Image 1 (cartoon, rainbow, N blue to C red):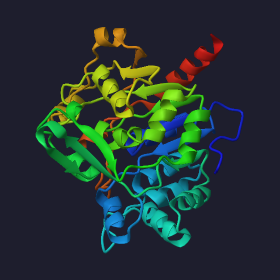
Image 2: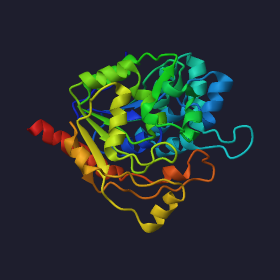
Image 3: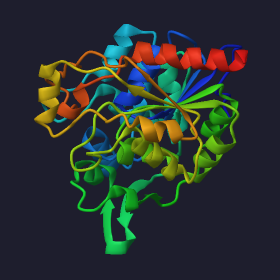
Image 4: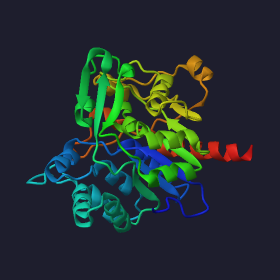
Length: 340
């Protein structure tokens, strides 16, 4: 088993997948080289979904984004993110194809990630939370309704309250021991912003991961989402997002919740209202009663610019945290806690 941390620096484990983890890792690497990205392995959409269905590969997409975030090699980073615009490979990123090829050559996805890490010269470690071939399932037992697959769930307009649904992986996933070790040995665990039911949930419902989060001595920080998601989390407040995070894991484990207090420009807000996405409401009364400490800040970043060839970015995902401000707050919280 590979050691997730090797130096006497602040040790940070980041949980999630996709854009949320990418932005947090990109900022946190300015504070420490001891980073472990614990990555969701239930993705089955877009390029990743095709590679899973046609080649039987484990999902490379979120892993690729985390590798790129931690890379110190700009040219290779751009190569991994390059997405073909035409032909047989249209919509596929080079990094996804390479990770899949490495898995086929080595017969082991963990080894494929390790080899890709060497190519990209990353600072830190990217760790799949499970090495099992799993798919996401969301079920409302009371009304006998089941959704299968992350892509289906991500696109669904929920007919019933998602807070009454059960989220699980099929078959039941065993936690990657290296991911568990990273949580146990970290000084800080960051639950990155991301879709509750398709990015964060698939990680937190794995029993070994949930148990490690409840037992670790690390300070655990959840960076709350900036906007709601139409048909899924509309009307959810900051505390309700945090409640779902802890529900997935089967109990309380958060020490801090960071939320945004900054208002976007009218133009940005209107773009999101057009998608029925709204800023997450800060419910201070509920937050003040919560067992964790809730901290607000100016965490709103610049709008992202989607690339012509990037078919994965939706209008909802263009709003971003000011990851540098969030990272600085997280490090200050940790330094304050060890000084007490």
